[in-house]
Structures are given as structure tokens and as C-alpha cells.
Length: 481
Image (cartoon, rainbow, N blue to C red; front, side):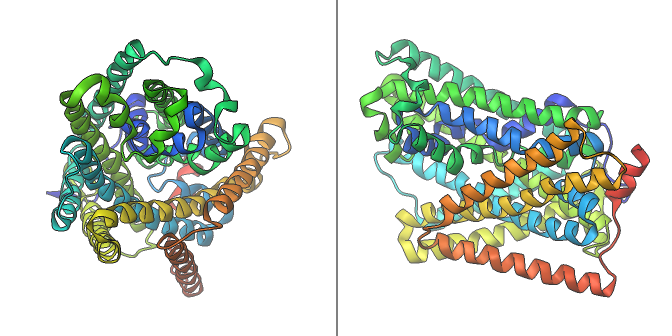
């Protein structure tokens, strides 16, 4: 049974939304992919990377946090763009955000399969999955994502919280055991000078990897219409979720580097799963298998939550009549956008299978999954830059339009200084990360530029034809005012 009455209200509170951020950031990544990136750039000083990354992401996202206090809008970032720059620019951001989530689906489903592949490398003495199993696992991921997306959000939120809590418990327990047993405990792990390139090398690592650990931090925005006291709770949930993930990241990475010591910490950068490589000598294979299972659970929900955000974004675009399909605005008896979730599952699985098969064809079954994962990741990062910079710059224009003085100290800091700093960080990170790309990543970057051009053309045509649709977020702000 379905209805067209819109999303259900008052489904999730502060902690549920906070753990949506935790799930999207994926705590176990601090012992898997994020750990490898941190050790690569910072060596024994890896625990500093999540610290500086969190500081940068929160400072750069001040306009987004302020936006969460102004309105509740299931379409997320494009709402702020629309308030500041109008419907045309807002709809462009909505398309770029939609494509971002589509490739985030590719990233997380491929990463789910990759966690199995990389972990089994340690647990089964170099076992490599056949390619067809790898692809099948990715498809099954989307089936599970669809199921989680259409159940009652209150139920899904409980699953999300459980996923986050069990990851945190495992990381705390494993880390504590290693910290107690290792002879290499040292506060040098918080000394930037021990990084391979000193402070400059550490900062480069923070720019290229650190604040990108928190890519999914803003998912509570997409659940704001279903949240309790969303004007008060969404921005708090984002901060709480980032702080929880940061604390776990610092702790996990410290335990990993002190497990092998200062002189050997850089060796972890060559490991597929640094956490397992560091923990297994202390904890044994049985504990490694438990880590593997919990990592899979965490990776799953790390993808499910952005997938659920995709459905809310698509629902909002349909409600605005920008897409022009009532099919996408239908919700089921639980208040979840079922048809949008189905579209996400089908589109995501198709794009994932295409990318995985192409990478396996060109690079083989041993390297193809790796390239599929990081090709999707590089495209997600580029798309993230685009759909973040524009809304952050929009806040000052919205404040001016609404009759508020941009020049007051608070408004100037949140709408001018913070986004200007964010743009500088984004542009610098984009340049450092993409200035010397090799294939297939360069091809992915070109694809992102082509997608942006196509999106701009689509918006221009719809603007010319007067079919940009409505602006629900503008009415929402007016009602709140």
C-alpha cells in the first residue's frame, strides 16, 4: 500500500541522526581504507590526520550547519543553493548531488565486495575471489540497500545505531588490547614532525585524505523533514557524528601504529587492511574473523545511509516537479519513498556492474576490483567538491536577500570567511589530488566534467522552457519565518 501524503514526520531524533553521520563516515574505515591513507601521508603520526581533518571539515561546513538551522529540506544541499542563487543554480546542484550519490553507491557496493576480498587475503592465505562472485556480491548489496531504504525509518535507525555501536565496541576492545600489550606506546604519534614529510607532509595528507574521511558527514540534512525538532537537532547531529567518528579514528589509528612501532609504521601503508595487519599478530585469526564480519556490517550501513539519502534527494526533486515524475514522489505505508529507492537500486547496480566489469576486463580479477573502488572514489570526491562549494557560497546571498546584514560579525564569519576558507581548501585539495592523475582516474575526472556540462545544459534548457519546477525549500523557509 502506498500514499502520496509525503514523508512521515518525527521519525528520528538527535542520536539517530548522529549515528547516520557515524554510519556514513564508517568507523571501521579508520582501521581499513582511511588508516592506509593516513599512514601513507603521516606514518607514525597517523592519529593526527583525523584530528585536523575533522577541524577542517567542520570549519568549511559552517554555512551548511547554519542552513540546517534555517530550514528542514529532504533535498539537502541544493536547498541552500536555491535560497541564495535561485532555482536554476539550485537544480544544477541537485543534479550534481544526485550523480554524486549514484557514484557513492558504486563506491560503497564495490567497497563492500572489496572488504571481503582484502580481508580474505589475510584470513585465507592470499585467496582471490572469482570475478563473477565479486560482481554478484555488489548486486546483492543493492538488494539489501533497497530493503533498508523502504522499512520504517524508526526501524532502520535502530539498525544504523546498532551497526555504529558494534563497530565502536570492536575498535575500542581491539585497540585497548593492543595498546596494553605493545611495547611501542609513545606520544610521538601526536608529533607532526615524525610524519615522513614533517608538518608539510602531514598537512598535505590532511588536505588530500584527512577531511575527505568525513565525506558523508551531511546525511542528516536529507532526513531533516522526518526528524524531531530538526531545526535544533540536525546541525547538532552532524557535529556529534563527526566528533564520535573523530574520537574513534584517533584511537584506532593510534593502536595500529603503536602495534608495530615508530620505525615500522610506514609499512602499514602497503597493507590492504592496516587494522587486520596490525591486530592479528596480537589477537589471532579468530579475532580477525570477527573484525572481518563487523567491518562488513559497517561497510554495508556505510553505504545504506547515503543510498537512503539518495532516495530523499530524488523524492525532493520529484516534489519540486523538476524531474516531472509523480512516480518518484510516492511513499509507502511506512512513510518511505519506495519508488525512489527502487530507482536507486536499479541505477546503482547497473552503473556498478559496468564499472566493475570494465576494470576487471582491463586490469584483471586481482587488480580490477581495486581500480573499480578507487575510480568510483575519485569521481565521488570530484563531485563532492562541486556540490559543496556552490551551496557554501550561497549563504551570504540568502542572508542579503532575506534582509539580514552580512556585515555583522557573526554573519560575516559564517557566510563569508568560512566559505572562503572552504573554497581555498577545496581548490587546493582538488589541485593536489587531481593534477597528476593516471588512468583510469583521469578518465573518471573527464567523465565528471562531461556530466557537469550535461547537467548545466539540461538546466539551461528547462529554464528556457519554463520547466524548472517549484521551490519547496523557499516556501518552507517562509513558513518558518
